[in-house]
Image (cartoon, rainbow, N blue to C red; front, side, top):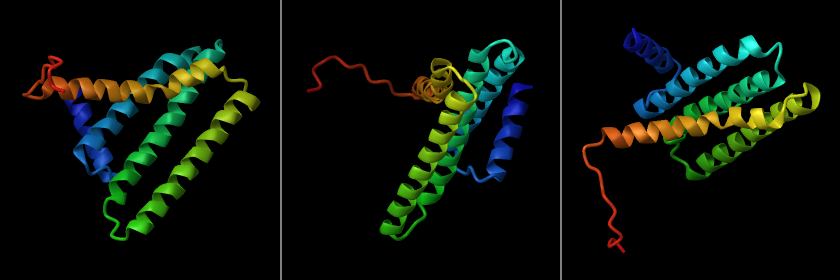
Length: 150
């Protein structure tokens, strides 16, 4: 059942432009992590500001990450390097501005707690750590550092 769900989610992401398998896996894992956080926090959001603050942070970082992942795949196709750099900078500052406004709105207007909001934003770091551990565990070669490499 889990494999079927993962395959359906992968096909859905592929149709939306996430063509690189590693990127698609990261986006899929972030979406699953977001769904889990929302499933746990939304029932509690009526009684706890921390719960909906965590959920809001997770949704903000997931939207930002999905946008970055899709754009990152497209930018490699640019022929003109100047155009590519300008596109990267423009999209970076646009994402930064939108995320900043969303965080400001959550804290200043809706009364979100900063620490749970930051914990929600940190879910993308958890996603990368889990991805890296799985990737390392699945590799056939493991390097043992002895201190004599330098």
